[in-house]
Length: 140
Image (cartoon, rainbow, N blue to C red):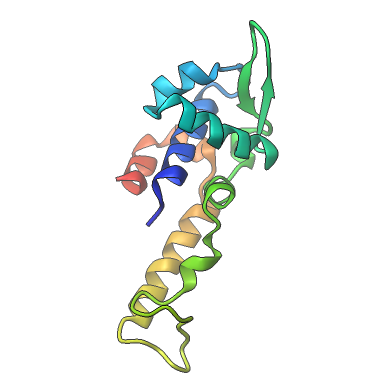
């Protein structure tokens, strides 16, 4: 459902949520989240620009959440990296699919996408830290 960049960002943000107010160096975060360093650095920049992370340079610098983990939803993280508006397109064609002119799988696909959106909007980083299996279910 999610592209690899979005999954990497969610994993990194979950690791930061577990250490909510501590500064974490990008190199350490790359190891913890199992994401290539240079790839992660690009994603972290996007998350900083979106206001989800704070960054500071220097010996004790790094990254940390800009808001409490309970106030950041998975939707915010994913949508920063991979805007989800295009996920409403038809599974079988290149056009928008709608109930007035549905494809053969429109109803099932719509229900699945609604469930994904509901999960992402209703799950905070704090939820993921409290229930790690909830995140693993989505990222596999």
